[in-house]
Length: 348
Ligand code: 13P
Ligand code: SF4
Image (cartoon, rainbow, N blue to C red; front, side, top):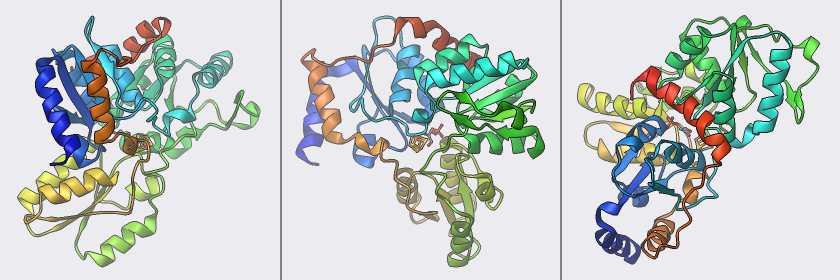
């Protein structure tokens, strides 16, 4: 234990049931050790309505805090230890640009349903709600894409083109029914040359952490750990996913590690996702199976949250000085609508 760890423990005792600390699985071990609830983005969102504490401290990136603030009860506040930690992919889709693109598609006569990955700003979620769409996470993107396809003549999947391709593959939607949009700062460019009539339109965004995995990493892992199993997060490019034994959300990868440890003791699992999670899984299943990261992959934004910043936000809450996350009142209803549509379709 260090002094920061001790100070957090003391403060937590003082604050008692007033505080619930939640953390995404990509947080480092020192932060996760303080979390009452840890989960992937879907699990965190699902837990929020059942939290009684007056203050939720969300250790993760900004969009996770915003989703928590939407789902929090009346009078409940959400605090981020590091408000500047922002998902790099969510920054690839400014809401005003998304609005222009949706308008261009509507003007072109398309009845397009937007499906927004949870890794988007509140304003993009609000726009999605306004246009009759919903949010999805990596854990339910297949269900939600099928849901969206039933509601229009096509879907725009925003902003992760890689997740969009991987989910379309799972639903058997051919590649020639998908199109990655070419966009500039004002909207869709050179419309006549783009096949905008396709069933799945993909926003040209990606996670730079997962998109950096390359096919040769999988080949090298298979050569180094003979007979290993390789599982990756679906934010990886589809060329990687097809080479792997399995792909799925953060919670899927956690279950996969437990399954391998239980059913195939002594075997090796290579996981392609954020490294903090992979190292934690390796430690928790040590002695049962070997788990290695596919490659170095640290999310710099998730890493901005530290134990020290967690202590600081707890001190501020105790001193009634912490600024809770504020939700623009014009965005609240439509953003909540897009999120609750997802929770209703996939079960609260
Ligand atoms: P999950 O939905 O699997 O938690 O993923 C969130 C994320 O940011 C992955 O990079
Ligand atoms: Fe965003 Fe990628 Fe970091 Fe996940 S790992 S929070 S998608 S930048």
